[in-house]
Length: 160
Image (cartoon, helix red, strand yellow):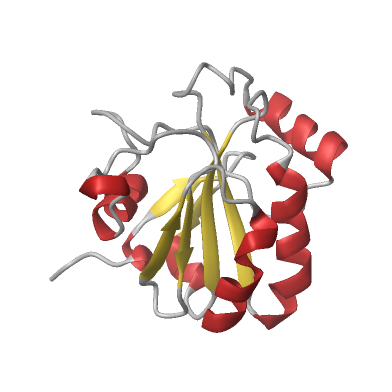
């Protein structure tokens, strides 16, 4: 039996374990984030997307990662405070993880396999790579870090 999104769980920033079957029936945008990246202002757009569509069953899931230029060096409290004070983030944020390499979180190993990047590579290239997941837990599309959240409105609407 192949894995689905709902087979995974991850630790939230507050330390609680979050099972992904809790998101069954929702449309998700899963993003690896960083607080000190050139793409960090995308937090504002991600929050706007979340607020626009959350009543229709859309959730953004943010996964801080320090693997690209050490741009997420803070601990959970520092990350939470930054996201809250700078961008008023209300979507779920998770504990810092690895998205590539031997210690990659199993969710990201699965996501990368389901939706390979350019030229078929599975590796995440940089912060703010985005995966759009439909209500059945299937990866619909992978978006590059430079793809701004406001460019995803039509894609999100099409799977809602």
